[in-house]
Length: 115
Length: 113
Image (cartoon, rainbow over all chains, first blue to last red; front, side):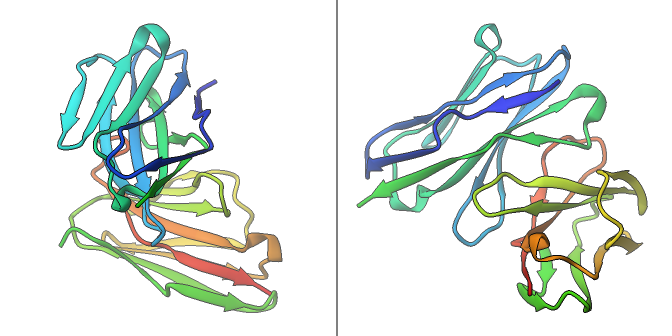
């Protein structure tokens, strides 16, 4: 069965610090997709990134970077030089290749960036 | 237009009421979704529509009735709800067969009294 674990329930850091959000997944499929979503207090989920299981290249987008390691089944997310606007709940999610219309979310990590 | 619009933003209803949630997108997405999110929990999939046809029903109670009148609209009809159905209801859309790259609406916060 597929599963996504975000062990960090809540993290607080001071503005401008770097912070890494951990995500560990389980799946029996060789084809799967991993995602990160951000949910600010306003409620909508904002899609950040999708990575397929065949692409282990790390990705950087501005202050955001993602480290995908199949060997440890992890897909970690780092925010560099954090800002107060980064405060949100961040969800890691997984979909298996044969169920690309269904994604399973982790329980989320609530990130507080303190001014 | 790159948004998914949900109305109303807040809804309070009694257990004997009938109400509907509405979701609209004009991005040409042919897959639309309803998710339910309880406080401090991740979203849970309820229904998936693909090309206006219901493709997934995650064993949702019949008091929730989805409808997709056209490719831009998705409704969720509510009847005889229970207080435990109080939650944030999120609509999302995506291109078909493009997993997970959903555009979510900001949700309807539903309270059943």
